[in-house]
Length: 142
Image (cartoon, rainbow, N blue to C red; front, side, top):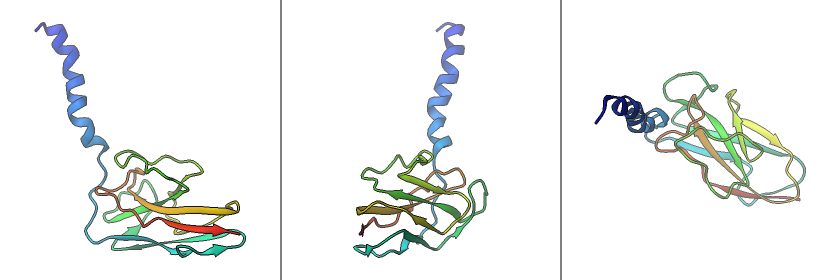
C-alpha cells in the first residue's frame, strides 16, 4: 500500500473506530427512576397542562455541568418514535429541553389526546447508557 493512501486512510480508520466512544452516553447508575408526577396517566385536563417531573436515585443539574450522578430533563410531547439514544436529543416543539435544571413546565396543548414522556440527558443532552426513560402517559385536554 502506498504511503499516500495510508496517510489518507489512517484518520478515517481512527474516526470510524473511535466515534462510537465519543458519542456514547454517560453510564447510568443502577436503580434510577424517572417518572411524571403529574398529570396522571389518563387524566382529563382543562386549560394549560402543568407537568411535574420526578427523579429518584440521581440529582438534577443544568446542562453543561459535569457533576456525577446528575442529569437534566427532556420532555417528549406526542412523540411516537424515540429519537436515537446515542446522540444529543433534538430540540423542537416535540422534544423539549430543560437544560436549566427545571423540574416542571406549563404547556399550552390543543384539545385532544396527547402523550408525554421524559428522557434524562447528560451534560451534553445525550441520554444515559442505558437510557433513563419514564413511562409514556396519555392525557386528554378538554
